[in-house]
Amino acid sequence: MSGPLNKAFENDIAILTMDDGRANALGHAMIDALNAALDEAEGKAKTVLIAGREKRFCAGFDLDVMASGPENVRKLVSAGADLLMRLYEYPLPVVMACTGHALAAGGLLLLAGDTRIGTEGDFRIGLPEVAIGMTMPVFGIGLARDRLARHRFTEAVTQARIYGPADAVAVGYLDEAVPASSLLETARARAAALAALQQPAFANTKRKERKVTIDLIRSTLKADSATFDGANSR
Image (cartoon, rainbow, N blue to C red; front, side):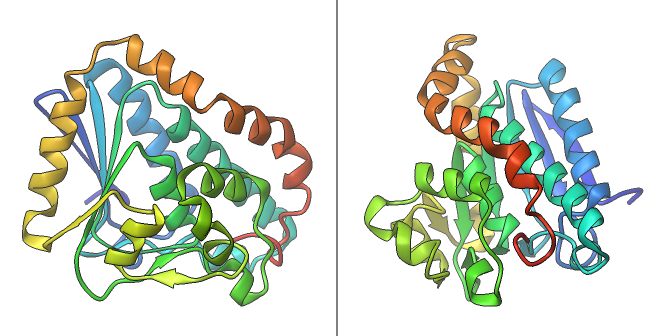
């Protein structure tokens, strides 16, 4: 493997598998690789499937960078926010195959996808920021408010509750949880069904559906990024 992301194109589906050999942290290399793959997918695919390595979907932002000083933190979190918003607005359908733990920015990756299918098992999914002394950024709150069940929003975000896959479905991080042995098959089938939707009708409707959240995050992102110092973001 030459980088943290494996790419494959199968039957109009761009399959992007995150695998840094560890916890699939979102560092600059992973973010850059995902952005480059999304560029390529727009010209070669009709839908995108993003998966993680076995038992690890994404553990959040790279902790080495997050401990390296405020300026480095701001650069990484801002790059991560841009990636999340790109996925949230992406003109092609995006299916997330949650292969295991998805915490902090990993939880936000799920919220930025269109369809989220997770694996059953002893895995942790959620936003632990407040529990470890970090203030949630506006882009994280906005994505959570849009995708999570309204009556579970406060416990999930402000109270930093972490869930197993079954509860993650009820809360809204996942749409479905299936046995690990059938995860990728199920995700591919869903991606194929979404690929059949007509364009640009899908992209236009997705943009209209999410316009309120997009406008809020885009209008506050620059000012909010000034607070990303390692104590306020992850």
